[in-house]
Image (cartoon, rainbow, N blue to C red):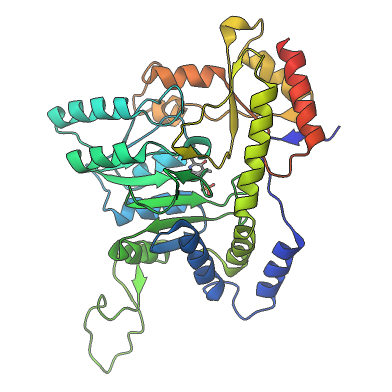
Length: 388
Ligand SMILES: *Cc1c(COP(=O)(O)O)cnc(C)c1O
């Protein structure tokens, strides 16, 4: 019995050839492939600028730094996300808070956000940055969040780690129409992969320049930014602030360019898999993922929500029985503030009730473009047996 993972990459001969070409070339890093990858993604998404980095976590960090987040500031995000969406605020010395989710989309709830902003304004604790997370690849209600940002003066970083290839109101996620920055992840379980990798997109050229410097030690060779020094001294670069080494290699970027050619096909395949799950799980005591009519999801994940009051089995039992049957289901996500590290900051169970209900009912079943018809049949059959 070969276990079926919840997500996995596809690597083709074209990907391997693209990587080998770089290995035989002059540049393994800081060469032309990174720029080519950035241009491929900006062209696809319709954004002006992109900064490729070694992970989405790094992309979130340079995004926060680029927006000037620091001590005394607040960053707000959804509890139902990977910890990186919140940790980026802590890296900058800011404080982090959470906005409960919408029970249908599992994205940050705009109603909860509006209510929390009104309270924060009175308390003088408005956030500097809000990070909406496009959960499973379905966009948040960005037009509404953008309009709140105009009213309350916060910046927006879209955590689109799940969502490259998805659309919102008919336009590609990543065009930053309703945000300052959008970030993507290229981890192997995500939609396309570079092994490890991430990218930050923006339409603001000054912000893109800052993020580029944060990617590479705070160093620049741009004479407009460098300080004047005596002409007889050689200053081919200067470090003008503190930065990091978050660079993506050309090896990774070449893999990314090659994968981008199959992005639309991958997302279509994910939709076919979702349609079959939708149809064949309809009689079971579970909620399949609801889709907003303005959204075209990239379907990174297919989360089912167990209707525990209609089932004899607990979430734990269903999870264990599926795994015992070789179906390596997962759980996305534990509310971030329930993590021991966040509880040390004072967060307690009960803080975001909708997120906690979701956490107690969710299971992510396998979803990836190379999932075979027979493996999907097996998953559907086992779910019927387990939940019978
Ligand atoms: C995967 C993920 C990240 C982190 O991505 P890395 O590329 O592994 O750093 C951040 N946010 C969300 C929502 C993710 O799913």
